[in-house]
Image (cartoon, rainbow, N blue to C red; front, top):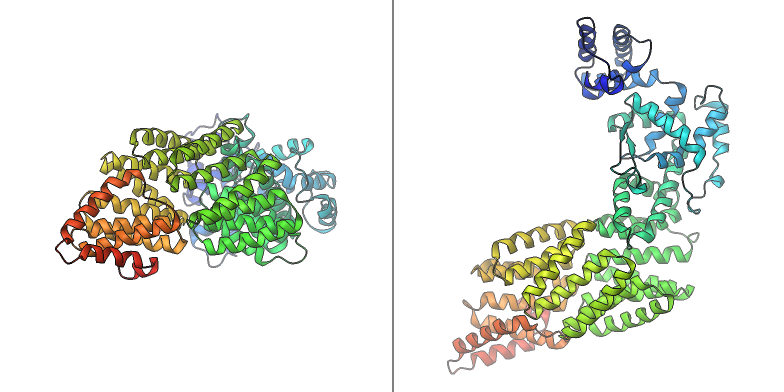
Length: 635
């Protein structure tokens, strides 16, 4: 009754019709989707409930005989779908089949772009409005939408006006028959929050079969891929600007369509697929699809040939390198970035050269190679200043701040963060502003100013939660969790850090996981759980060495030393000494906030080992003489 009223508001159950309604529901085995399709027919004029029941049961009986291997319920549902399909006009049947190319729903705009030309061509060829999709009519339709008329990466135009009315009317017709679902957007004035249509997956499978039988599935897939390739390119410049949140949300809604289009391009249009995947790499990063993004770009790169322009390949290599670097795969990131930089230098594109120098600086920074990182960043910054790329300038300034912070120059780091924040504010880039708050919070934290650190951390996390960037949120929670730890709120700190770790594991961010292992090791030690602390720090050390992060490795050695101090003072002394030597080698001194506990621990070890045998001095010398690999091997 509810579903019938959705189509015919004055429908009611009466003593006269209740028996027919019960019979219809029973014939459909009580399956909600099948009942919904039957109820939609109540709106059809001239069809009484007894007639509807007769037509339905007759059709189900006829259809069930040819569907071997299906359960009775599957036969009933499939029969109900086929019954509804047969009741459609030829126009709606052809449209219904072609709409199956969409995965996860679509907007009227998308339908207009993908099927608009096809629909007009079909209507022109038939007095009824659209003809069955076969024979001469199919040939005519294909001529009307030849590939030359649909350039995949032409400048995108707004939905063609004369498509809107027939397409919208056709969609509403299928919605009336419950073969489509219509979901209104929350704000009809926002192009990124438009209403959407979709099919139940069972219905879509049926429609795909009909589309395949028509012989038009390849053409529909090509137009579908073309539209979503254009959408990706439209989105790209907005994925790091003031409209970032709206565009990320739009891509979220069409994630399955984007995946389907990328799959098609990998088989039939590698160049288009490379441009599409490159345009989406920031989306993959923002939403945590790091592994998927890498896999898709790798697949496309492997299928490149001489027909792919060097510029397309160069940007794709850069996108893949950025995702590799984020996951801590520094070897692969360096290889891809170097190959990309070579191509950009040969082409002479300053923006490309700057982007790769920037990326290579990120890789060097991850490995605590501050000299190489600084050189790459400064060259990239000079290129960005020439081209006027303020967003990239702000990001490089932030990264230069990270280096000066690691080297102990906190005042200079704060000044660099402020300069970067000003640029992000001019651009309306909330994500960039949040990142500068995070790094300013960390600088305050390392100086022991936990009140300021907490305020900045909360500001950053509020902005990160607005953006929906899972990776940024994970680091924001880590930062705030460590502030809570230093303030003695151990339970809240554990919850915050553990949530961050879960996210980073899901995202595959090895560097971030190493950071959280170190944090949790410190928290466990503070609560007197030294065995757990050693386990956490050891995991962090192994991951830090895997990604080449020597500074993080030093923190892990110091955490292990603190956890071994009570039971094995000589081992603890060696570990503290090895960490001190490592910090000297990379130029990253222990932060001021850690200095007092460090000095106290060393003094206690010296006192315990000062028995006239020089055990403290011997352990210290042994630690300083070992490489990081040697130190890790004896823990």
